[in-house]
Length: 125
Length: 110
Image 1 (cartoon, one colour):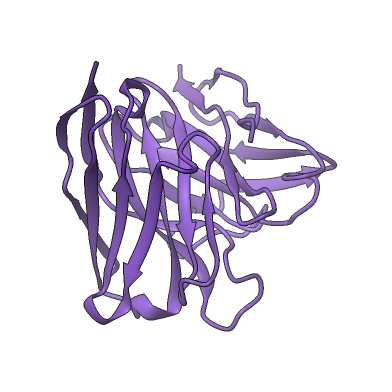
Image 2: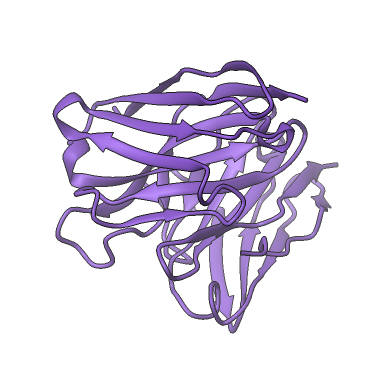
């Protein structure tokens, strides 16, 4: 069973930084791309960032480009999101999510098929 | 990176069908077959119910079906059950290593 457990959320002042982590288990972590998706209170889902299994393909939403950095450590089955220059509009529940595409398939990233339970980030002004 | 457009709400009586649209552009929905649908109950994490426009993951009942025409994808829930009352989100690959979600639709079972 796929398990994705996020951590690192909290309350932070505008302009400060926060690092989110996601511990993955129940699947071959090094064979799948991963995503971060967020959901502001009472709002819809917003894709934030993605990283391929080998870290060679990375993408960011325009709203976070230049401020957030996604990374992974396949040896530790871990995904991270470094969030700098945080803004009040970054306040959300952040989900770690697994991509459906497996290593060496095409396309290398395809879409989310499993979700964690999320970690809450609150940015005060 | 504009969100895909979904109707805010949809409803139907138990046993009836409801269809939700998801409209994008040729750069996302219209350009790729990687349209996914997710169901989210209040206070819960989303759950994948359709991928690649119309394929169902194991365990998802065949009451859920999908299609696509041009820049618009659709999700149909047939034989509505009370448990289908939830928020539904489409998503699509949008090129350049980017993805986009829909605005979300709240389905109410009357």
